[in-house]
Length: 218
Image (cartoon, rainbow, N blue to C red; front, side, top):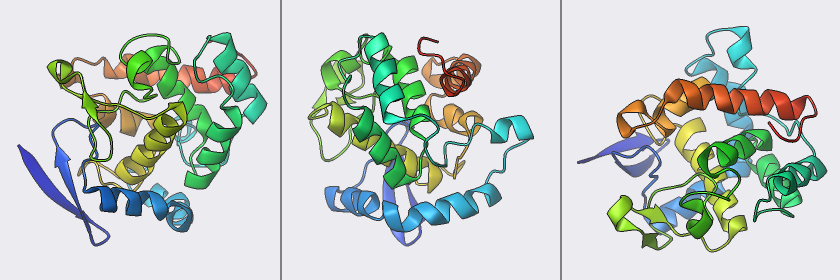
């Protein structure tokens, strides 16, 4: 079953899994390309869409400048023996491009695959364990299908694009724009798909707080 949802004059074809952002390849690249132009729009207007319920929750908006340095990103990846170690500057710069604090992408990476050392991501090089999308091969169909990234850099680029186009811009679901961790997780990893939403939210927010406070292992 699928549905069509219009956002800012674009039509996204969405499937039931919340980690799909299935579009034609040209439209997908158009969404990615407009990130620099729309990042300021997201930062200024997202607070008017699905506003945070309280001050504590607002602390966990994914929108904003980096709160950890490229060197700290690499130190964290090295501590977890991540195959993505050495990409700290790339992860940082890509976060700046999309207006997304990279500490949140690291938190997803940790929860999904212990920084690329466990599960499907070992094979697919996908920090967010993304499902199939039009510009990449679809593998492991017996498990529901996953996007096979070209490299870890490619995996991070696609995760940022998913968070930006799908969640901040609202293309993934009628429940979005989704800006905070507690708004994103029920769409990104819903309980009907076998996920523990509260555990995911707590783990994500704990990692963000710990890394911002100077921790390496959380």
